[in-house]
Length: 117
Image (cartoon, rainbow, N blue to C red; front, side, top):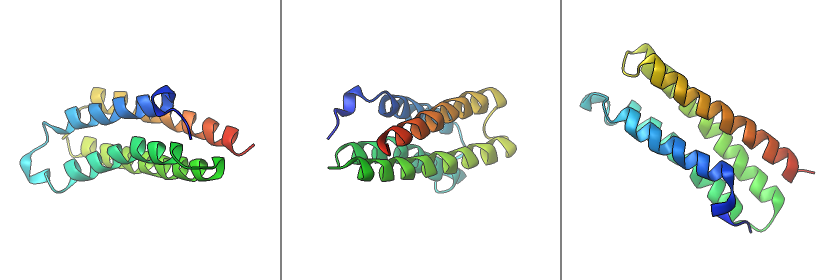
């Protein structure tokens, strides 16, 4: 088991999730069950899977949950690009969020490599 509060990747994933909630709060209400819900679910899935993996008993299990978190990050990336193309999300906000996602994906990959050694 890992001390979750000491995991930088988990903390950054929480920050991303908060930023996604803020960014989607201005979406039209007809997207409540569409892009708002999907984007928020994907965002929440990232730190949640990191946390679940951290609580597992082996490095292999942890790496598996990091893989799931990584998949959610790609899902979120896609939803944000779609939101931008529909003019629901401005370029500046999109680029900031994509930058955070890119950083998390790199951290995730490196962490998985470390766990798999």
